[in-house]
Image (cartoon, rainbow, N blue to C red; front, side, top):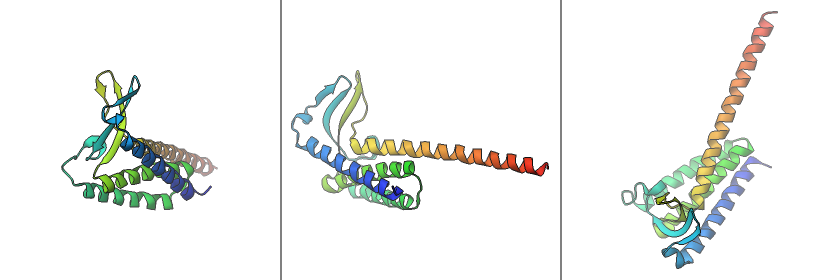
Length: 170
């Protein structure tokens, strides 16, 4: 399958899944108080006006954060269009879909809807959503793919040097 189709399909799936779960979260009155799902996971409705973990909340207007997000998505789409490989396409699709979903939240609500609350005892990780999960997963895949490429390039370089030395000795 074409890498572009993989990336775009993944982006569409992440976008649809995230928007669906956010709609459910916004429609639930129980989440205002929080609902324990597991001993380490609560569902709770949070409006994030900042970026990751609420940084820049109240400092930058929602439209500036949305514009920055659109610029980043445009760069990622160009990378997807030029990119090669299924892992790269999947990773970019995850990031693009998650980013677009959070951008839509900013445009519609002025903030991003978060509802997943992971915690261990009294320590709570900042609330997040499925788009955030997709962006983090996609970023991790990009890093791993880059490391894999670096190892492959290093191995190819060493092989070329070895062959040059071998043939040069004849």
